[in-house]
Image (cartoon, rainbow, N blue to C red; front, side, top):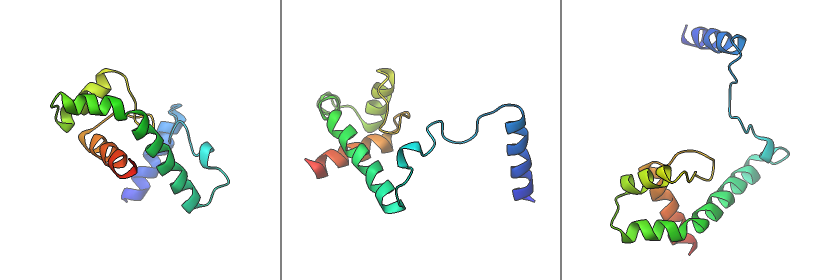
Length: 102
């Protein structure tokens, strides 16, 4: 029953003109196998973490918590590698990427 209700709700939303799924889709991954697609996503995240290393260092030097850093990055309009908002966990993972890669 859950599956049927979910499918009906998605169909109704689509009928109302709601765009479903990721706005980017998987266009950037077309033609890649799963391992290659995952590697491409990780590489992009590594580059983004490196690009933000200076800002992250500045926020850490100011003594900000992960939550504070996420709030500040969002306030500045800085997006994650996938174009989303920052959360404490995403800040932590970005910091770990820089530490591992650097």
